[in-house]
Length: 282
Picture 1 (tube, rainbow, N blue to C red):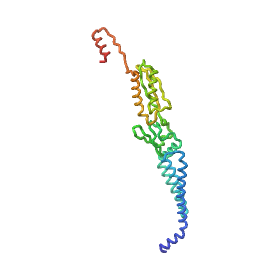
Picture 2 (cartoon, helix red, strand yellow):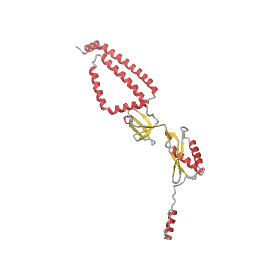
Picture 3 (tube, rainbow, N blue to C red):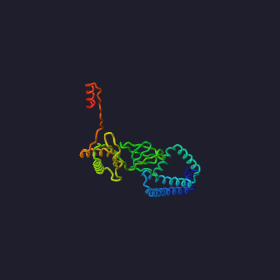
Picture 4 (cartoon, one colour):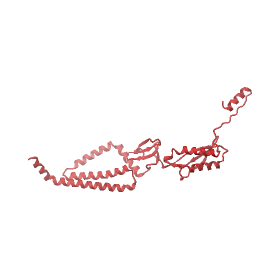
């Protein structure tokens, strides 16, 4: 039998099966596209990260295409039992080889749906701090103030103690004034300086109070709230404004001082010379 006759015989025997399989596969592609659009529209209300939304859409399409491929091969008369068994064995091997990766993916899904933190919030975990810049399925990235990036695998985050500061932080500013200062004037000046600063938030209100009666000064704590991006730049500006305001209102910020008493032991000039050096600081 010639090759031509063999081809004709093959087409007569399997032609309708091949055409049916191709029709099923083409229809499956259209269905996969429709399912992908439906999934994208459905998960849009969850406000997930763009890479995560894309992953779900692609996974839904992949499932439809894979199922369509199996139906297509089966329609063409191919025994799919060995194929399914082989895919199962390969899947087990891949799963064992990528166990760490899969655990990161599962942890990433937990983070995405549980939302213990969001992009733009300041968090602290594993002695690492930073602003969350990216949440992927495999890892979470934190941005430091120096623009460096810390990458934390998601499995290291889920189940651990996490401190989420949110999108605002409280500053800890401390100043000292002399004991003879008018504390009402000090409070008025400080409140005016802090409340007029453009980076200080109006709500929540900042805290003002005496924290300690030190050796040479009355220590005062000032704790205003600022946005995360202003946390590093605001304290120097407030300190400068407070110094200028204290000088303008003649509020003294004392230096540490010590009083030294020198007793003479009757040696005359030697004792007087030592006392002179002690007092003058020579």
